Each structure stands twice: as structure tokens, then as C-alpha cells.
Length: 213
Image (cartoon, rainbow, N blue to C red; front, side):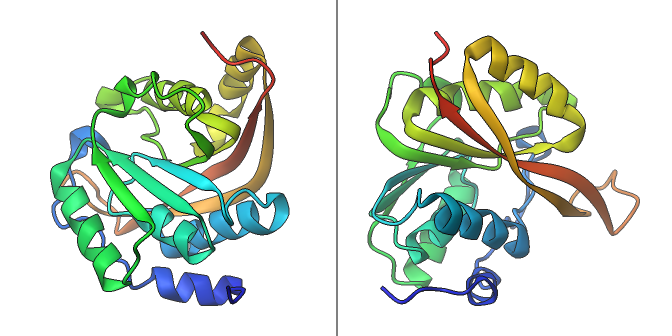
């Protein structure tokens, strides 16, 4: 498989369609192409956790991380999301790129804990756990750790780093901040006063020594 350069990957991911009518209760914000490309490129080139691996994308939305994973050679990538509308866009995106080793499942991510150790790698941009979803980021992380054999890669607000480190220590998992990124959040909802806001986020790698019960 041809090795994709970072700019090439970002250029391809710019063609992935986003949410048409984002749902505030689900904290639906698109993972921007440059964030997705940087995230996946680092996971692929630094840790070799994508190529020929079975990858899960939790809260996959319209599929940008899943599609990028397959472009980088994932053996199979399965996206999980509760929202049928988002998965319909994901399906169209996958067809547009003519990708076959990609799948999607509509479900509540919080109910996936029984799929223990089913995937090599879990990649996600979870809800940040704000407004109506307090703690949802940690719920996603706990499920992801139970699903992954090797590692979980997740985006979290830099402002929550200490809290996440405390949880990682409690769960006896290794936590490593592998990139600090600036997430340009576009105005998606009526209450947004600015056209976009920059949020500092950490790309964190979690590897399990002992999984949470």
C-alpha cells in the first residue's frame, strides 16, 4: 500500500461530508480534517497501531476517523454511533471513497462493555462531557479500554488532563499525552456567538496494564 503523507491524508479527509443537522444533546461537532489527519498519522507512524489492525471508532459520527484509518491500511475499521442520521452520512462517505473494509454499527456506545478485547486499537473523539453529558468522556474511555487489546487513542480538553490522569491512575492504565492540538470548533448551534472558537485538546494514548472493572 502506498504510504500517505500527512498533507495528502488531510487533503483526502477534507472531502468527507460532515453533519447536516448536528444534535446538541449528542455534542455533535465535526472532527476537523487537520485534527483527524494529525491524530491518525501520529498513531500510524509513531506507534504502528493502524496498519493491518482491527480498529474501533467510538462515537464515529460521519466517519472521518474510520475512513482515515482505512486509508492508512487498517485491516478493518468499525464505527459505532447512536445516531442513525450520522451513520447514513458515514455510509455515503464510505461509498464515495469506495472503501470495503469498513463497517458501522448503530448502538449506544455505553452498552459496548461486553465486547471485551475485540479490537487491537480504539480511536475516538468522544463527547467532551459538557452541558447535558457530564462525565460522558470518561464513560467512553472506560468502554474503550475494555474493548482494546493494545491501546486507546482519544481527544480530551487539555483543561481536564489532571482529572483524566487521576482516573487513569485509579484504573491502573498508562496515560501518555502524545500531541497537544488546537481544535477549531465551528459555530454549529444557535447559542454560538462566534464563527469559531479554538479549544486546546490533548491527543492521549492509553495502554492497559490492568483494565477497569
